[in-house]
Image 1: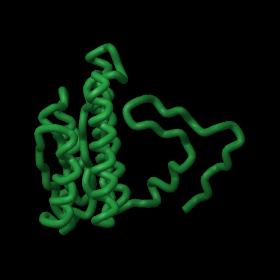
Image 2: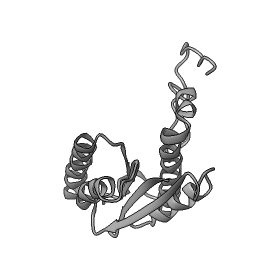
Image 3: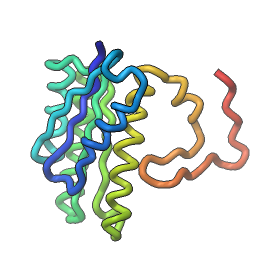
Image 4: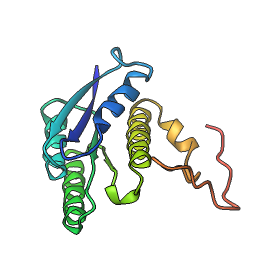
Amino acid sequence: MDRIGIVDTMFARYDMGSEALEELRECAGYGTLFEVVRRTVPGFKDLGVACKRLIEQEHCAIVIALGMPGRAPIDQVCAHEASQGIMLAQLLTSTHILEVFVHESEEEDPERLADVCVQRARKHARNAYWMLYEPEALTRRAGQGIRQGYGDAGPLLGSPAQPEL
């Protein structure tokens, strides 16, 4: 049975890990094709190591890394550093880690920010599932301006239609 990893943080102001887990539970094959392994770390700079450990020690086929950088300039710097760590973990393990950050500065309204957290966590959980089991679902959406957490931007005028797979 495959394993999908979820790593989230205590620093986040919304429990995106639970949203991602719930979305994966709704996917076909949960409990038969794959199981989910979840870990929580203090902050987003801890995500890279936690993801690497899930891949190497828990044999996860893909990992979702969820974090919520704050509004302060230092938080933005730390988010960049965390992102670098996540990318390095991907390269060292040759395994996809979907970085799912929701920056507090994206929204002033707390309700809207919470909705972005829900949508982004759930949509990336579904992306992880598609990457493992239905890659053609992603290909069908190529070039369509699909956003995770906000409304879709849509394709540019004149963008070629996707061929049937």
